[in-house]
Length: 104
Image (tube, rainbow, N blue to C red; front, side, top):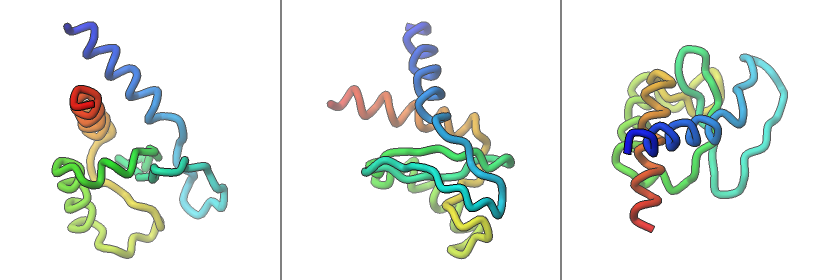
């Protein structure tokens, strides 16, 4: 059981680490697949691409509420920035992925 969870976390990390955020002020554009959106997480502002379906999940909505409290709606980076650690975000996404696959 522990091995399955560890494999799930490793898989989620690989999936989420597909892209890394450009530095502030960079004009480099990166691809976001249809049905997904990009968020920036942690102090390093690492870029993650997540499914739009997460927007309806209460735990993800709580992260959005934190972002609103921290940055408001006009953040200088221009992207949706989530004020939590990368480890916390990866744990949450892993949980969301596992609950999505078990309900399918």
